[in-house]
Structure formats: structure tokens, C-alpha cells
Length: 142
Image 1 (cartoon, rainbow, N blue to C red):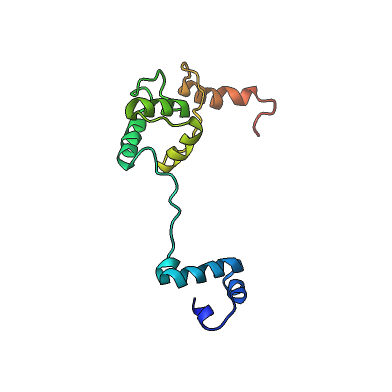
Image 2: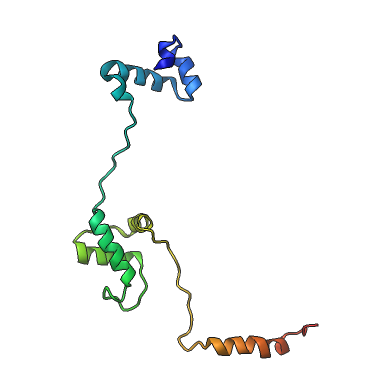
């Protein structure tokens, strides 16, 4: 508005500020109608979240306890399982495709569990790598 008051044309102000000339004209009209309050930044409202802050904290605690504690056969959280838990505990339905955003907002990240045999013996594996593997290699170490 100061630039316009100094006598610059809306086209010149737009070029200086780096916006479209129509934006400058819109700002000028809003300023004439409501003063400086009309030029204050207004965050986009968007749709309010289905779970309020308190419910999100409860969901976070539920997720941290694990999927088995929530009644699932394994301790792996998947988006369909999270949606089912939310529906059971809060009575709110979320589409599984949108749960990723909610989980990221809560601080969770997608991770893939490593598949390992239940019978896996780490000590035996390390022993084999140190003792048997060098003998099995085509080229022994120098």
C-alpha cells in the first residue's frame, strides 16, 4: 500500500513485489473497504480434523502399545488395522488412504518389518560367517 501511496501504478508494484497485477488491485480494493485489517494474513481454514487433539493423543498411546494390545494377532500396524482401531475406539471412520497423513502428523513413519525365521540363531550365523564362510569362498583371503 505504501508503494501505491507513493504513486506507483499497480502494474509496477506487482513487478516489484513479484505478484500478479490483479493481486495488487484486489489488495487495493480490500484496503479501501476495510483498511489494514483486510490485508492481514489469513490461514486457509480447511476441513477440521475428525479426531480432536485429545483423541489424537489417545490414538498415539494406543498405537505405541502395539497392535496385539489392540486385539490383532500380530504386532504389525497397517493402515487398515489403524482404521479399524479408530473405528472401534472412537467411532470415527477414516479411509485407509488418508491415514498416512494422520500418522505422519502424529510422528509415525512407514516402516517395513524385516522378515526373519523364528528359528534364526544369530550367534550361530556370526560363527558361520567367521569360520566357515572364508573356507567356502572361491578366493581365500590373502
